[in-house]
Length: 191
Length: 191
Image 1 (tube, rainbow over the protein chains, first blue to last red):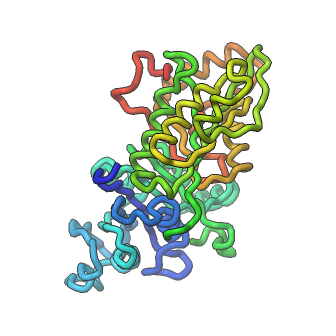
Image 2: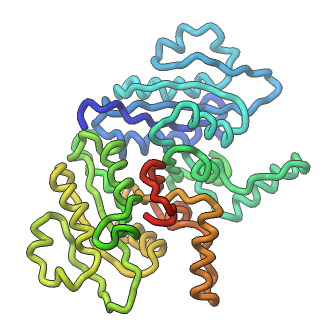
Image 3: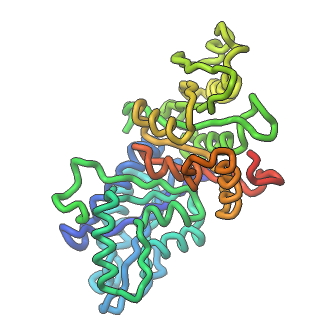
């Protein structure tokens, strides 16, 4: 199997709800670290990581970017660094890949994370999708979705997590990495 | 990450419904080949494969075996070769690992596959569980489970597949590998 094309692993990453932007969530970092330690290991040339950050649209009038970010220089040279949310988040992952010597690409899309991730899987066709999960129990999840459904009563709310949705609908194998118990914040809904 | 302990991947394997015992199902072989090609690649010393075959109890009075099978010799030397179902199935996977140079272990348990797999994950604590899936659509699955519920009307039937159950309940990350379209038999319930 030497010389075969690299295994392309897509990792969905989002920002921390505790530390705020541009810090990566505990789950995102957990998913990334798990892929490095358990899958890629010392075989850095056998893999390519594809980081997707899905930004939920807000009033800032954020636009999709078609550019790809694959090395620390790409972030230094860009024009709209301060105007575009999400970039610093990707910078963390791209920098770490660069240090370790794993090829990577990173990009941002806006929309509903679960729908966009599945759409991007269809478009990019990775070998594997890795998503972090807070590992919430049924009661915590109920509380979480109950809150959302209050904000928009006219919507039918998907009762489940982004990772569960992707496991059902993404057109590639999916691994959901649960957050480690010793990294769970006081309020487990935080990340 | 050199010198770290090998990543232990458990793979649930079962027999073919078409070719009959001792042939491995298309899904099982698919899950194994996927792990070799996409995860292990050329890094054979970085991984250990753990093959679990769960035998559904029947009238043959089959007993659990505590022995582990880790090399082709283990199968030649055993006493009860012909009396114990499932062994030839494991032999296929152990032989292939031996050829490729990946360390492995294999064992058999009896019971309800989805329950036993989750129980064995708890006991053995692999880094990752890989299960094959026939990739049946909702209608095909309904037909499948409907049939089972006729045979035992007093049972509440789990509506879903072994891989879906494991993704929800196994205490480790789980990858479900769908059978390739070009390998799907005429009746997709077959495997």
